[in-house]
Image (tube, rainbow, N blue to C red; front, side, top):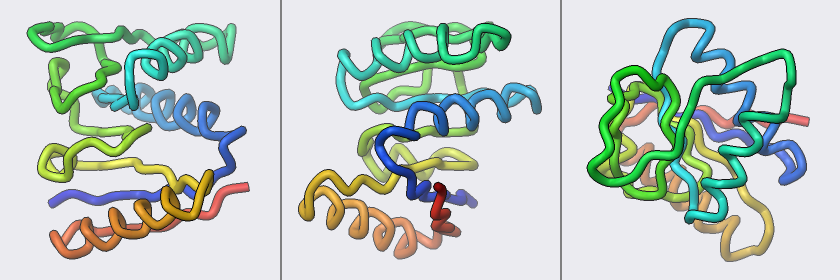
Length: 141
């Protein structure tokens, strides 16, 4: 059964939180898939994972349909694909729910950039619960 954590962080802390989630998973030797909302965001996440902490290297790569890499523990994708066979999903955008619930642990983010987007986050929270996914909301400073 899947579990989902909704991280309620400000936009300015989102990248740092993604980094921390990935760093923690890698310390436990777990594979991570980061779902990015478009190619530009995937490039931003790729760059952030390289430069955020100079002393900490997080092996990763942007992957596309048809790519397979059993050696890369962190894959960044823009579609509903899991080329690295990860168990942990970090959803930086809204991927398909049928895709998301295949993961053991799902990390989502509460976005408050507009009332419509915030409402979409609330609906996503309810959709996970309706699928019997254990959902947790973390208010993070």
